[in-house]
Length: 108
Image 1 (cartoon, one colour):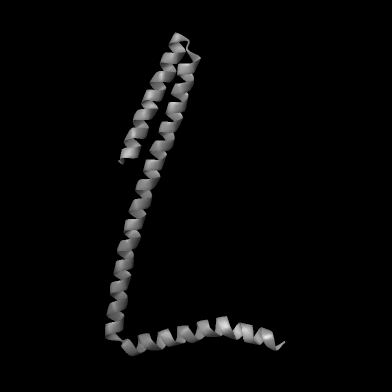
Image 2: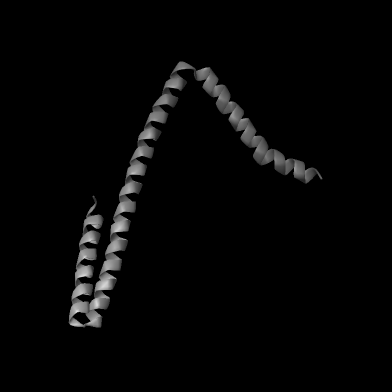
């Protein structure tokens, strides 16, 4: 659990307490502050949860990217001619898409 989640839950509790006390003693200002604190606590807790999830996803993506890089390096070591041919083919295809379309359009 992240610090934002802990603080958010604590703030929600404080807000609920202020709201209850304000209601019991008939203080609408304290009750309103309690409602605001509770809402802000919910937002902070949600932010902490989302932040933690995003951090985990980023770590997982970085791990997968490192693995893919290793796999690609192994393929290049094992079959360099095949990899060069694929790279050449991709380069030609991109060149035709970018420059070929503009030349065909300018002939009309």
